[in-house]
Length: 191
Image (cartoon, rainbow, N blue to C red; front, top):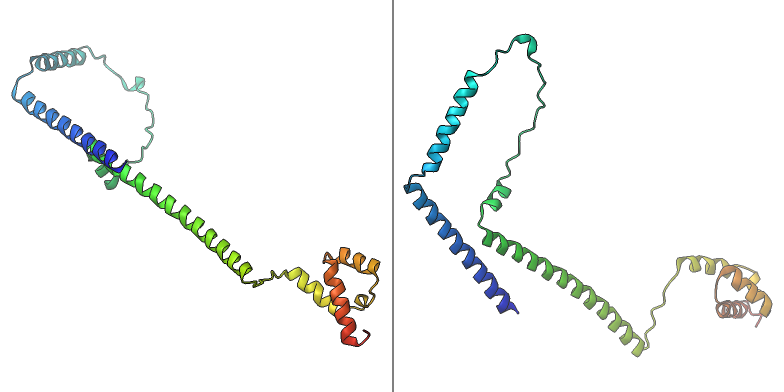
């Protein structure tokens, strides 16, 4: 695929270079010969100008309407864009194709690095599961609720209905509250 693209690019550049060489030689030969139609056209233009100057009506100051001219900002000459426009077509095509290929390669590399990173995290998680390592996720909202429960007296009541009601209010697992209740009772010596 790369070879085919390279061959097409080379052949296109050679064809456009050959065309520009033929055009430049035709211009040089045209300069040497005299073009009669151009000479006749110049003479016609001169005659029309002379006739229009002779037939021009006399303009008085009362008939002149002055129209204010709109100031046109001067065009900015950008040397880089002028340089690019001055290049032959086959070189412009080659440069734009090169930039396009580089852009595609950079996007592809970025996508592959993201996929590789995600695969690496997945492999790390799988290996931690195989080695039975546990990485608990800590929720800051639940940590605050757990601290409040530690000093709360409502945790001493171990009835099933009270624990399930408290778990729904605090949005904490029921088993976690049961475990906390048992630990608190063990701490205080009530168990």
